[in-house]
Length: 601
Image: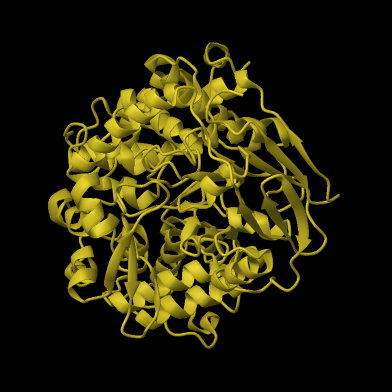
């Protein structure tokens, strides 16, 4: 088996209890790299894309990349891939921490779960020893408690756990998978798929470490790329100092910090909730890194209430802060801790609550629907805590919130108030202030998402070069390039934050040295394009209409009311035809010629 691949895939049939091992084809590894790419290939070949995401027919895949578990900088990522219950499209959710590296150390590139158990189970892995075990006594436990209980039963406190909380068990459509108590495979509802399969957790301990074909060459590249990361102002200074919340003031000052459900892009109370405030108020205790990470952007925090945990990071803090109009940093942080324990995606949960707030304030959501809950008013600290808990347990209005903002807004006759693309809630950048980011949102294979192509880097931060955020010229090519490169990075098993400093050539160096495959830069980027098109084909087979490559009406028709982007809307109609042309698609569909070129036919 080439290089740093473990060379083994676990196949677990939850319906029958059968567990078997198989060896991946090296040619498939070369074409799809690993991680997101390899899992997307297996998903496309193992399931009917039209299957109900919450049925036994959905396939759930935990996957690592060739850099996962190596000493490559930030090489600790793993992904959870399946069909999303939130969007009905492909779900591919990325997480850090130490779980992915431990899975590789146990000797596995991937775990494929098929079918569904009749009663709750968990998967126990200790190197070659793999077994399904009863999890009835774990069902209902929050993620931190379940993690402690599993380690105690396993008999090794160093074992790594990925599990769901009550939200996943209750099939909340944006439930996530939590590993290491604080890291989340957060988006698209992968936790609900685990819940539907009655799979509470995976616990793993491994004793092997992946080896490159030429360790001296690999280590030389690692030293070189790590030095680049340490010398870069973002990865060497900004992220280590303030984490992702270094962005709060930057994005707000640039006028694209979505406030009160994207009604404006300027939040008047950013100073109360930003990364600097987390430090000044004394809540930040230290930073922490994932496996083999020189950046160490995670925030370890403790509140005056004695609550402890990690975060909030930029997206979580924004979703419960500016998006809900809340300036209470304690409440925002408590909501973030609650999401980790309950197993909820902070972005989708916060934005869905913000949608409910606008529905309520404009008279579309009647007061009687709140039951005993507090009024859903922008700025309410009480509301964000109460309805987060209610969502995880589907209590009262929480039952509707658990369906996500798109279904919620449709239920109240105001679909235009859902700030979502293809059913998934948008993250913390109003694209009226960043045209390429708007195009990236509209065309993302997993719905509203910033980490499938982070065009904020060039449009706002000037990385790798500064683009005019209001111009549409050339943005289609930028979006395609970022989408393809991100597909490569996700497939490598390395953190996307490294892309603030590393170039495509740097990733090629690491990939070739790790695997022994002599990739050219062009071949590596072709792998990214192949993965993107494979995902698109899966989505089209699942029922995607290319007309869904769009944005909420507010962002297309309502000019930004204030700030640096006053008067701006997203000019999607100018960019989308060019994007399809650059992709080699006709009417939003990959042509037969393009699929043959990518060896997908």
